[in-house]
Length: 403
Image 1: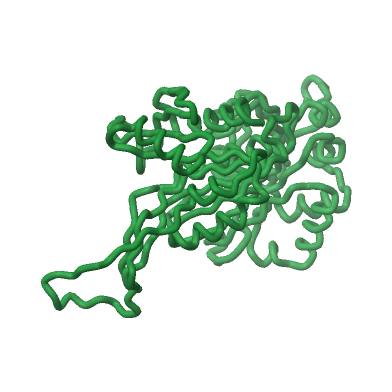
Image 2: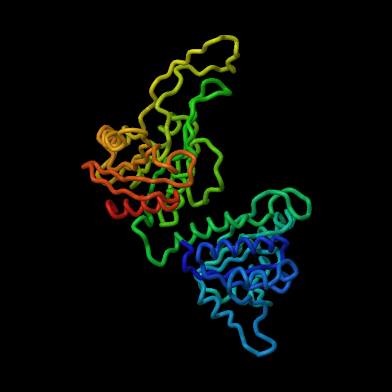
């Protein structure tokens, strides 16, 4: 989503300015075109040379070149950009933006920019929570400025609390999500409600132990992120696990057990245009859940299991002709035959097949190799790719076949 995008990065006088070096590098890695405008005080924290090398563009600090008299037009900057990002945004700059003060190149560009604007506040926690700063941020929100609120953590002052600048990797995710919702060329997914399940389920044995699997949730999360970037309204029903930050545009419903996922999925499905079932839901759950931790006082322990509710089959039973249902199948033998059987039994429209026998595919990997199979047995194979690229392939397939 950042490839070819024209981004102005404004840098202000905050210790968090050192993070802009990493941020610029990540934007260039995504093949964005980046121009940096620095306030005079920001140069006390990071040098223009550093950002010039990383952005591969000259850095703009003053309205004109005192040696040649060449004027750098704040109006041209505003017309050029697809997005104006200020990171870090100091309390001083936020206050000036809220009150229309334009005493440097960055602020004059703010007043003339026609593109969407996003800011990442960065300051000490007391400054961040001060009534004047909160009022200024509220004022900017009302004017349409997108605020990436500061997470809590350790600050340069030694205090703990809100006020840190969001980490560069998280900012990149937010940029992608934001730009996806303001695409120059709309995708067929734009405005469509997509339901995605991801991750494992944990079936409790006692308060300590559970039956689970090795699903990382990476494939489902990649699908959710890509779908949002393509303009969809995404509900992600997510099983337990350790995950990175998920873009706030994704509605996340956390669940633990197969029963939890069943209830949440059935509730969300009727309003969804497409459902993609990427979760690794347990097929069995203990008949009895012990209220206390089972003590190791026997040589053998027998745990009776019962089948869980079949989410895919139930959705297949109630889906309408206006809905698409896509399942996943991770197989270790007779892959295609088992996948076709699953399609017919559960009334799926398509199934995404991956095999444990394929190197680099399956649980835990950042890559996957898939085959998309339809009811009639038609197949489309894809080579081994990153899960982000696989997610794009799946969503492109859905657009082509259904939307």
